[in-house]
Length: 221
Image (cartoon, rainbow, N blue to C red):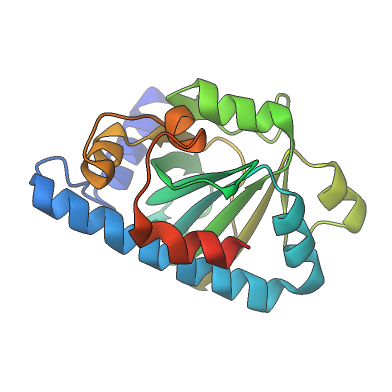
């Protein structure tokens, strides 16, 4: 593959979204609260549109990654980027949220732009371990973890997947790419939201609380 093409694609994708690297602590706290509120709304949409399958997957999922606004787009070379939250199921129910971001660059026929709400339902222990063990990892649909699209998978595929991805999109972009997405913990947002340094594993184990996230936990059931 032509390295110049990859560099051009990465530059084009980088222009899609500018992250708040210079945000103040106050702005970051507001961003975290807004993201958690939007995530609760996304869960409601998934439950309303996904029917019995969505309800069953939520009842059996080990964790969920929710990206309320995943922006995708490009001309010739596409990409995606978004902020999200992870909640894990424990003995006392759903944990409080840990913050994540995802990004990818892909080659192929890409036109226009699209905003998607995405929920990744983590169904297996090995998928959950990957999330909790690593600050940065890559979702792969071939080898490693098995990923399926909720909207197109058969019942057998849903039941056998490590991760089931539900999405609802609007725009001109053609379809959801499941593989190759880099997922990273946002430790800076974790710290601003909880007022202390903390990571996803500590949050999942009940090390911190923030009542503002209780409606999201309730929405998950």
